[in-house]
Length: 70
Image (tube, rainbow, N blue to C red; front, side, top):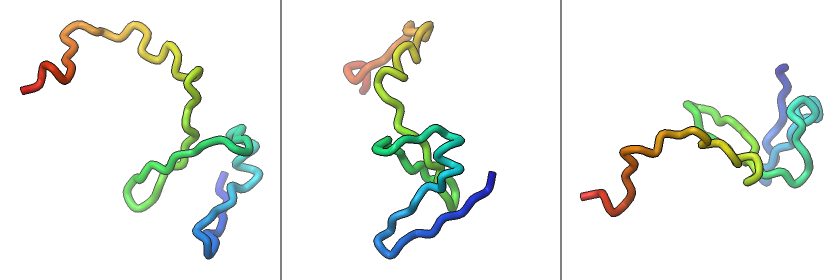
């Protein structure tokens, strides 16, 4: 899918309906701009409940914290 939008004089953009529908974005949803080269990637900020279990099974051996730094 390739759609375009225009940056307004107030530096605002509208996300085209086709993109909102395909990605399931809703009004009030927080998004983050991630710089990449000469452009950006626009991704939704995950909710806390979506992060639950993300590190399940992570190896915590040899873990360092601030107190271990020189």
